[in-house]
Length: 279
Image (tube, rainbow, N blue to C red):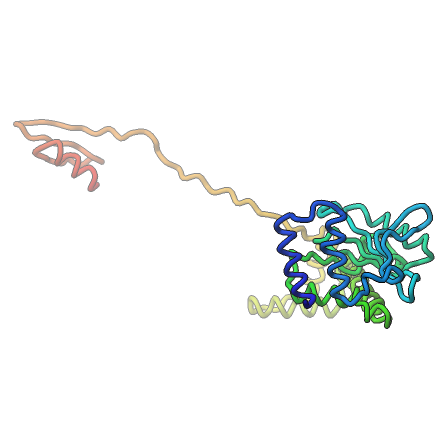
């Protein structure tokens, strides 16, 4: 059976709520995926269950060479993995720096590089949710970081480090963008002024003076533009609520009425109503 077929069956079981505890997640999800990824799950020197770390035990140590941990895997009940990353990092540090660690509750798989810098969540290379991600991505990520062949060759660790560095770059760029924009405004960069002036000209047909654009930027640096919802209060419609007096007369059997200063004749109450509605 191919990896994707295993993942598909695991997804079905997850949706049905069949994994009730850590043992069922270990047996029905983790061991199954490891075997599909090429790990010799019956060789306890390679896939070591309940691996001792001082006075504690990590659920699995994936070893290469034998009995030398390359990856620690900690298993939790479905939906109970939050906060377990700290425990996993402690295991990795006490063992002399295991380079990769995986935390999973069967549905979510968190891949970490414990030896990198930052908070625990910042050292996470990737978070894979089997129920949220497409099948191809699930299979590709599991293979990329956890394949037995790629772990033995060192390629899996290289992949994780490349993806980690990319994530760090993106995080640093996002952090620096607001400061960079503020400096451009404060320093009134010439290229920015020209760009704004050209855009204004393209929109309204008139190119603003450089001083006008510079003054605008100065005001922006003093009071940054905030995204807000502008509430427009509708103007109340002025209505004269006083009822108009209508005069209804009856002379010689004829029915009449006066509306807006004009006299109308009618032969019946029905005609009165019809005339009023027309007006």
